[in-house]
Length: 175
Image (cartoon, rainbow, N blue to C red):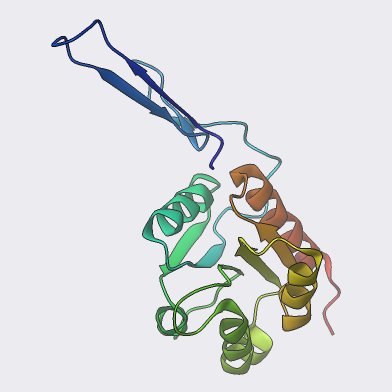
């Protein structure tokens, strides 16, 4: 689902096995430190605070690692309530949110965030969801998200989307 590979090797019964899992977020080279793969043309993520909301712990960690590797500061939350608590007294530059979460969903989150943050609400908002139809995209955009990406997301696509949204916001004339 994340564009990685899994392989298993064995020299035969009783000889053990080697299991290799490779994910596209980082590349491991023997004797070298891990480095990001295929870095997109990200420029505006450096130092940006990104609220990431997803109820799946593995997805939350993957997304947090992805934005961290791009130089951003992830602010992870596993629910709407956690997200609202996380932004208290904090300025966020972008938000990535799952839509289908137990209790309150991503649509509820964006409404509550807009009410709570008002003019401080970031323009860089991404709905990240398994709901992939054109109607789902329209619903997310109508709810107030600026972009709609489907799971599993290519990390480079997510980073580039955030970069584009942040760059567009920075270029917007201020009143």
